[in-house]
Image (cartoon, rainbow, N blue to C red; front, side, top):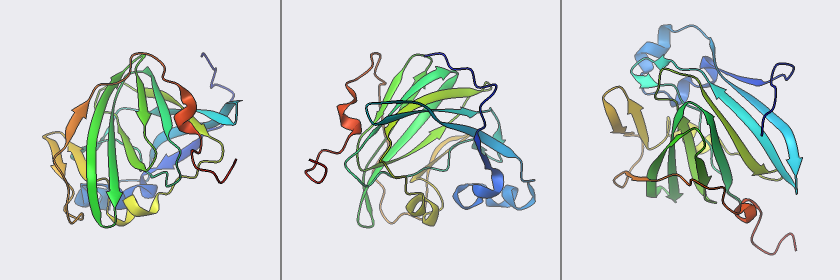
Length: 199
């Protein structure tokens, strides 16, 4: 799906919006408040779903690769990402109480589909020297909760130049493992509420 973004106005995430979730706090203290990434929301709607595009220019945040702020979907709704240009690493984590019970990452390149299951928090990282452009399908009724990842100063792992490192603000974190992206578009039913409250 080709959408021209030239005449579209994005929501912009600035560095100051992100300082609480960064690994390199010393670097952040003196960094200027520049634009980090751009979110074009509601470019298309279909069957109660919303289609967005996010553009994450390549850069380093001190020792850490640029990333999104990260959020959870606490309802029984998932999200689907499609890599349009560049490469991305998608970190997923599932929390029960104070404990992370599952965490993995998916590396995606142009044409790959990355499903985010319901109840998982997720963060997108641009680990390359090129812009990452990705689209997503999500329910228009889905709410994003940024507070928990913010309180923990980021996801349960950070992705640095030296590789993955655990976030010590989490009490218990399982070992990180990888999954392969989907090469074909999955059924979008997992994006809608599965319980009975909307029937």
